[in-house]
Length: 234
Length: 234
Image (tube, each protein chain N blue to C red):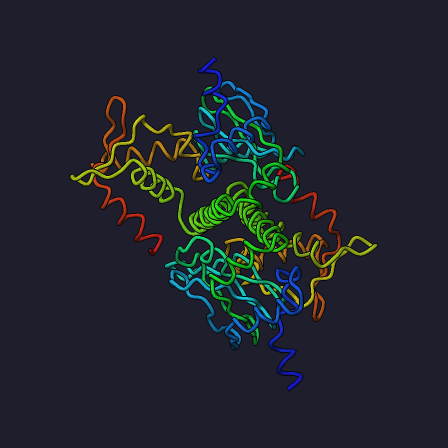
């Protein structure tokens, strides 16, 4: 029973941190609680529902499938994050599909409850505004990269992004573990798995990356930065 | 004098419509008023100021210049719109540059005043949220087009977008006037002027567009839609 209560708590959701524990519990009672298996679809692009989804456990991928079956990853979100806010705000159909990456539990918040919460709590409103601003900035960066970089350099830029997220050690290296899946990188930078494999082989030959049993080690993050920035012009 | 007062009025700014005339006049007194010549830069990308700009007269282009000098147009905004809200929200450097397209007058609103206004007026907050959601959706569409369409089809898609904005007549045609500048289309879909010229020549040969003295006529918008949708998969 205690476990059941803990699992149906919204205490781990960043957006709801400005609420008191009692207020969060009241919000939790207005949610529907759902579990999804790995690869199961949570939101279908173009669907009409406007709910906001809070990720309690697991992780999800925001993704678009093109007519030719190409998969474009817009973002991956783990526990504590939320998605589906665009349709709640503007009432338009979903802009992307969302699928569970692993066994995932979500709390589904009706759009009206979400909008009432953010408009009555200034702290939540600021977090929502910053999240939307960050989405615009991330998208703009991707538009710039798609418009100005070749596929090879987009793979370099994505490896650099992942190295920064993983953290850079005193020796200037970064450890990506588990080893990034080629298809995932391809989907994030709009290229093919084959191009990702080729770029990684080239980087290995230049001693810039090394593939260990369960990690990809970026041996010289600074050098990778130079390669990316010399093309991006930052 | 009457003219001077009218020119320093914020009555035409959509975002401020929820305010009373007195409240708008109070906001106007907190603005700095500036004029820019055609092509003059209003915001420099990476600059640190956080002001929000209200377009009183004229029009502006939100733009990014790559290291190689490539120009990427993110949006064009006319009188009544505003820009610069991302830095006001998150305090980060500017995500893009902004330049005046024609003789332009702006009212410059300090970030703190902007944030206080949107957090105390629910109507303004809803408009801001919808504007940000729209920016995310537009960016996502552009990422999809850049990732899945060739340059030719991106030009088709941009012509289709402009035809819809211009309005489609009973005979299924749309009149784009003045004639779109090749470089402007190229900048919006991340291609070259030469590609735009070639695509327009191809469409003219297929009798899908006709160039008049001061307008580009899309003769069969439905046919153009079919071309775009067969590739996009909508």
